[in-house]
Length: 280
Length: 129
Image 1 (cartoon, rainbow over the protein chains, first blue to last red):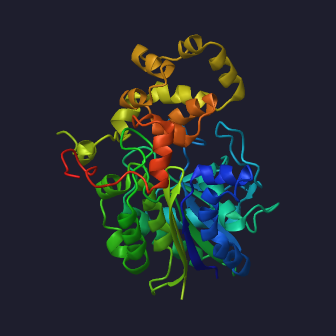
Image 2: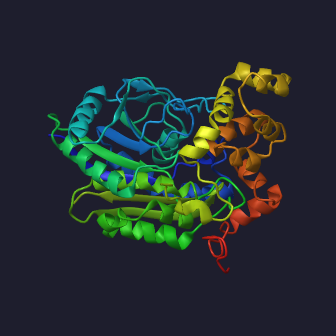
C-alpha cells in the first residue's frame, strides 16, 4: 500500500522564482532566503518520494473568473509551466501521476469532498516555485507531481477546518492505493503578506511563528481559526495559509518529527515560512 | 438578510468577495487577456481602443488608463488579475503593491527590508498603534 512519509510547507513567492531564473541567488538579499532551503534540498535528495501531492493556488493563470473551482485535482500526465505575463519560467515540465490522482479523486469525492477534476492545466509559480526551492535547477523534477489547486483568490476560500478534514481524506485515499508508493504532501503559500491597498506590505512575524508552532503541535485547534483572523492578522493574501492545513491533515495522528524549520522576512512583499515534518 | 462581512473594518483592505468579483468581472477578464503577447501589443498600441472592446464601465477604463490600482480594486479588480497590467508595463509585484500605499518605490522597499508594515494599529479601523 502507498503511504505518506512526510510533508513540506513553504511560501511560493513569484520573485523567488524570478531570482533563481535570472541568476540572482548569490545576491545578499536572496542569499538569506535560499540559505533556509540548503538543508531542504539535501533532505529531499535523501528522501525523494515516488510522488509529491502538491497543494497550491493558481493566481489567475489557469483559472480566470470564468470558472473558480474551490478544490481542483490535476489528473493529467503532464503540466506545462504557465506564461503568467513575463513568459513561462524556464523550468522542467511537471510530470503527473494520473493513476494515483484518479484514485485519490475517486476516494475523496466518495468522502464528500466535491473536487473538480482537471485534465488539462498549465501550472504557475504557486506550484513551480516550491519545486525550485526544494530541488534547485534540475533538468527534470525528481518525481511525478499531482497538482492540487485551491481557490484562495476569491473570497470566501475554504475554511481551515474544511482543509484539515480534506487532508485526512487524502491520507485515507493514499493509504488505500494498491502500490507501495512513498508520497509526500506539500502545502504552499503564505506566510503573512498583503499585496493590495494602502495596507500592502503587512507582515506579522509573531502571528506567523505562532502559526508554525500550532501547525506542528496543535493542528486540530489551529484548523478552527476563522477566516477573519487570517485576513486581519496576516494580510488579505495571508489566507493562503489554509492550504498548509491540507498537508498537515494528511499526516499521521502521531506527533511529527520536525526535520527543519525556517522563517525569514522579506522576499519581495512576503514573509517566508518553511517546515519539513516527517511521519513517525 | 444581509450576509455578515466582518472584514469590512480592516483598514486599507478590500476583500475580493463574490460581490466584488461580480462588479469586476469584465475588468478582470480584460486583464486576463493580457496574458497573450499579441493582446499586450495591441493594448500598448492603443489602450483606449483596446479597452473599448470590453463591456467595462467608463470608471473602470479610466482607472486602468491612470494605472490607479486602488481605484481598480474598489471597482472590482483583483490584484492577481491587475498584475497582468503590471507585467505588460514591465513592473514587478513589489512595484505594483508599493504603488497602492502612497509610498515611493524606495520607501516601500526599505519598509519591507526592515520587516514590513507593522500589524500594530492596522488590525481594524481605530486601533491604536
